[in-house]
Amino acid sequence: MMTQNADKKREQMQIFCMDDLVPQDHLLRLIDKAIDWNFIYELVRDKYSSDAGRPSMDPVMLIRIPFIQYLYGIKSMRQTIKEIEVNVAYRWFLGLEMVDKVPHFSTFGKNYTRRFKDTDLFEQIFSYILEQCYRFKFVDPREVFVDATHVKACANSRKMQKRIAKEEALFYEEILKKEITQDRLAHGKKPLKDKKDDSNPPPSSGGGNQEETKTIKCSTTDPESGWFRKGEHKHVFAYAIETACDKNGWILGYTVNPGNLHDSRTFKGLYDKIKDTGIQILVADAGYKTPSIAKLLIDDGIQPLLPYKRPMTKEGYFGKHEYVYDEYYDSYICPNNKVLEYSTTNRDGYREYKSCAMVCESCPYLSRCTGSRDRVKVVTRHIWEPYLEMCEDIRHTMGMKELYAQRKETIERIFGTAKENHGFRYTQMIGKSRMEMKAGLTFACMNLKKLAKMKQRLGLMAESTNCIFAKILRNLYYKRKSVPGFAS
Image (tube, rainbow, N blue to C red; front, side, top):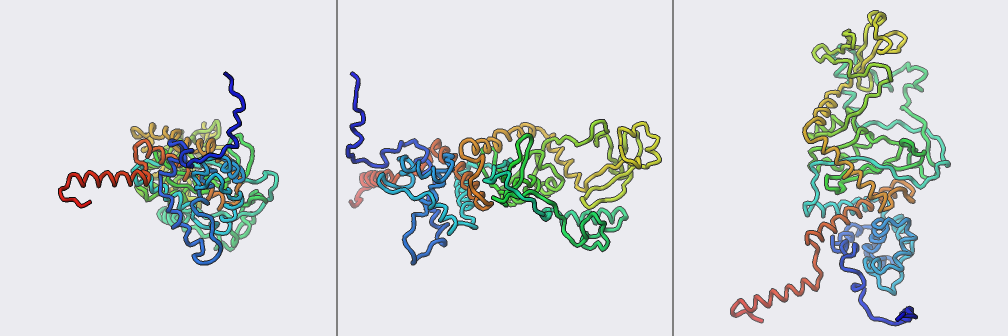
């Protein structure tokens, strides 16, 4: 028999418990049990007045609202509030009853501007959740994978202006200068003069007392983003999110940088956050294969696992590997068995080895060796080149090829999951500080979701108060029966 008028129950009054409406295996229920959310009160205590003003919204509920947004990849805070209005599980997670009014969508933004802006609150939330992962020994930081992904900024690519940007100092600049000076003195050369001390600079240098500058494209909407293009992608303003994870997919740290900065330049900021976690092997792609990074890791006792990097040699010319380095005589041997002797060490830390023009003039391989007018071949070798050679030895060690192949299952999978499921392809936030908030909460959600599921699988979930109280009564009952003279 066909049933009709199924909407008769819409206006019926019912008595129910909010907890009964949320399934026991719901993700938000697992996340609610995974950690003790009261830690947020301690983090924000100094952001609130203790005796003045109106009562505020519960800080835990205030932080849980963006957690819902990033956990489910909802596009905006306005849409998140609309979802909370009709979703019982969201209301239960926030501690709202069915008749409670949901906060306005601008509430979190106003609180961020007045209380949380320019603070490390969201990084502390990420760190606390990561500590819980360490507590249960889920994280294995011995093998760490590092990479960066780009998130499209909230900036129109047509609204830009060009500005002069100062060349930022590299993290290894001071150490490199000292070693360049030592290397030149060892070869009988005078130390290089500082550019600021050069009284007669060439006209093209722009003046000896000026810092090195360059012209870059800057967004008028979000000046802190960077102009980015990779492969065949169109030009966009973006942020580079550099991230580290272990072999089990736990996110260990992150940094936010403009999209126009190379990974090797921003690596030091991320490395300072994770270097004390017990790393033994650090796996990264070819963008990190630089002498400075190799030296930094090896000097700290970490093995850098970096891939083969194809030499950037012009087609039709000899590759650099065809010029053999003689370590004893500190010289190179060309394919025609002629010697290229040491000439100088430049400001970038490269030793220059030059051939003799009179010898090269009659060489049958001249057209494949160099196209210079003076017929002089120059081969360069960085003073930290031995560190790159050690990286090559590590790369050829047994088991390293299989370890490097795990990048697609670890760090690349994290980026794919964040973009597909957590709204990490682009941002509606303007400014680097807001982008750091988005990255921190997104990665905190991913770690927390993983932690909740792992604890459920292993039976480590915290029990409810009723269950604990029932266990206490049961233990007291059995203790009373077993112990003679036990007072009731």
